[in-house]
Amino acid sequence: MTAMASSALAADAQRTSFGKLNDGTPIEKVTLTNDHGMSVSIMTLGAAVHTLKVPDRKGHIDDVVLGYDTPAEYLADPQYFGASVGRFANRIAKGKFTLDGKTYQLDVNDGPNSLHGGADGFDKRVWKIDSVKSGPIASVTMSYDSPDGQEGYPGDLHVTATYSLGKENTLKIVYKATTDKPTIVNISNHSYWNLSGAQATVGAMHDILTLNASHFTPIDSTLIPTGKIESVEGTPFDFRKPTRIGLRVRDGSSEQIRYAHGYDHNFVIDGQVGKVRQMARLEDPKSGRVLEIWSDAPGLQFYSGNFLDGTMLGKGQHLYREGDAVVFEPQLFPDAPNHPNFPSATLNPGQTYSNTIEFKFSTEK
Ligand code: GLA
Image (cartoon, rainbow, N blue to C red; front, side, top):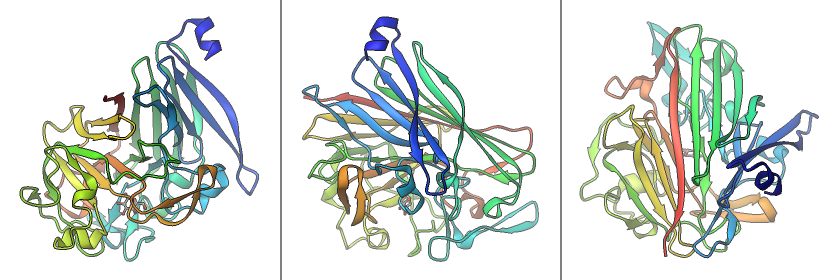
C-alpha cells in the first residue's frame, strides 16, 4: 500500500515466492492490490486465485475465497479451489467425444465421467508467469502449454490466463487458447465464495442470489446434461428474482436437486452470447458484500458446495462443510461436445478461444 501511494499508481502488482511442492517445484504468487481495499493473489499452481480480500459494509477487509495455506495441499485436492479449470471445465460423459469422425477417450476421474480436464487437469499444472504489470491497471498473465494427447485431448494447446485489477473493485479474468489441431476447449475459474469471509462460522446458504437465466440444462444421476434446455419457471432453479439460496437447496421434491445434492447445474444465461453481460448477483446480508458475475460465455455453472464434507482443512485450519461457499463458473455448457444443440466447444487451428469473466465487488447497507 505504501509503495502504491508513493508511486501514485491506482494498482500494484507484486511477485513473491509461495513455497514449494513436495517434489521441490517452486510455486510463485502474484498479488494485485488497488487503493480501494481490494487485493487478489494468484498462484502459478493452477493459475488459481489463492486469496481475494475486499471490504464489507463497515470497511472491514476479509478474504472471501476458500483455499489452502500451502500449494502442496492443492495437489491432493479434488475441490478445485480457485483454479483455472480445463482443458474442459465440468463434465464430459464417459470421457468420450467424437471430432471430425475420430473418437477420443479422455481420463475418467469422476465416476463414469471426465471432470475438469481429467485427474491432472490445468488445476494441477504449474503455469509460467509471462508478465506482471503495475499501473492504472495491475495485471498478471500466466500461460500453460498442454501437449497433444495430454489427458487424452488432441492438439498442442497454448493457454493464457490474464488477471487484472484497476481502481474499481473488479477482478477481470481473460482466458485464451490456441491449438495446432482441431480440439475442444472450455476454461473457467473455480473460485469458492463465502462473502462473510472464508473463515466465517456462517456459510453461503443465507446469501441472496439473482441469476439472469430463464433456462437451465437438467442433468442425469451422474450430473451429465440430458441435452434438454428447460424453463426455470416453477422450479427451484428460478432465481430471476433475488432469492435466498438455502430456501430451496433441500427441496427433495425436485429430482434435479436430489441428483446434485443441491445445486450443481448449468444455467443458460439470457442476453447475447459473446457480449460481456451480467450473469449473477450474490448478496450477503450479514457483511453487506455484493458480488456480481459478468461474462461473455453462454452458460454459468452454479454449484452450491455440495461436496464440502468437513474433511478439508482450509486456510487457517478452518474446516469446510457443505454449503460453506458457492461457485459460479461462466463457461460453455457441460458435455457440449456430445450435444449438437449446445454451443460448440470445437477450436480449430487459426482460431482463438476466449472467455472473459468479471467479478465485481461492492457493498449494500
Ligand atoms: C464443479 C462440478 C461439481 C464439483 C466441483 C468440484 O463445480 O460441477 O460437481 O465436481 O466442480 O468439486
